[in-house]
Length: 441
View 1 (spheres, rainbow, N blue to C red):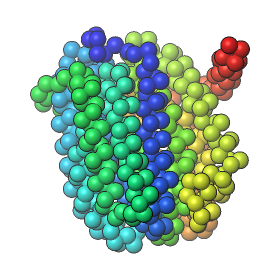
View 2: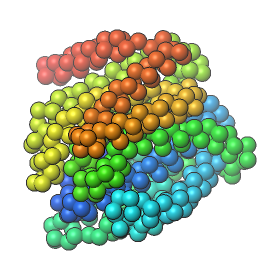
View 3: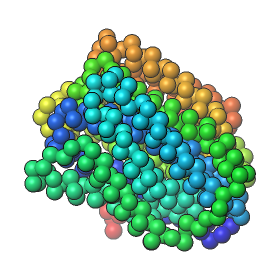
View 4: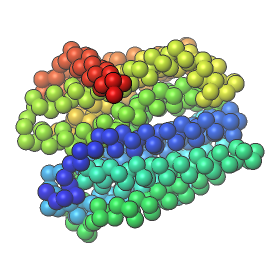
């Protein structure tokens, strides 16, 4: 194994810090945006970001996991794998841009969002810049070197926060397309900084047809899984836009975004553990992978549970700080969606484990099952209960999906739900012991 492919001891920490940086700046940007934009403009921006996120997650799924998995299993071919992955990354980005432009006008009419087609037109600029930055991130994950991820995310988020803060101070209200220009400029700056600082990691060779086919065959299931997963998490927003319009999307999206920040350590841990699961499955078999899966779910819960409890108690103040007056409806929605957040560790690790052991097709099928469940529940409950119906549909749908996921995992490895709870206690005892030791010093 080359030096650049050796695992880093600080990989988990740097991966989590990279996600914390990304989401921390996103939080500050959201705080400013909610004060810069009208409720209607913010609702429209939230609908645009919903579609944008699905496109970017589809592209990440098509490229990232295959790149990481094949670099781990074929280190001698890593340069050609990277070259083929980049070709697929940009090719799919162009196809997604064309597809979004074709769908823009129908979606704009469905959501009563007249500016949606213009926003979609600028996705091409965003795709080139952020797509390049994210591809460098995928390569770093494959190399198990996460320092550049922190650099890129810090610049991408920090520049946006700085410009938005300046606009807020001087009283400038940006048009929505200017927000896209800002995103693209920040992503381009992050790309340049990561490339210059970690350039030795990004060696590549011209792709071969054989690697293009292997990566595409692997990635097509993960693409479908990621797209289905995003639909699963955003179908409620889309149906709220359909049944109730962009203004109703605004308070619901505030509650949803607040719970999404609880997932920051989950994404970091899942990113760091993916290559370890892949290696363990190939070299040691099912039992060690099951233990790694259980411990990681427990670690995710240990990090998520305190935040859920704090937000439950402080929901009125948290919403007031986040969004200001006019978003009081988000308080009750937030408390319902916190139950959904507690189920996320199981759902995220099911997908990570299935992809890492080479079963992305199974993960894809279960995401489709979850999408059908959540769509049906949302379509029934939103007209009957309004925004609370959407939140209850998310919670019920995730609970059913987690139960199905656990049943499926047990067909491949001896995972135990009770062991996750035991490991959760171990994690808290370890943290308490470390805290007690530091206080003693």
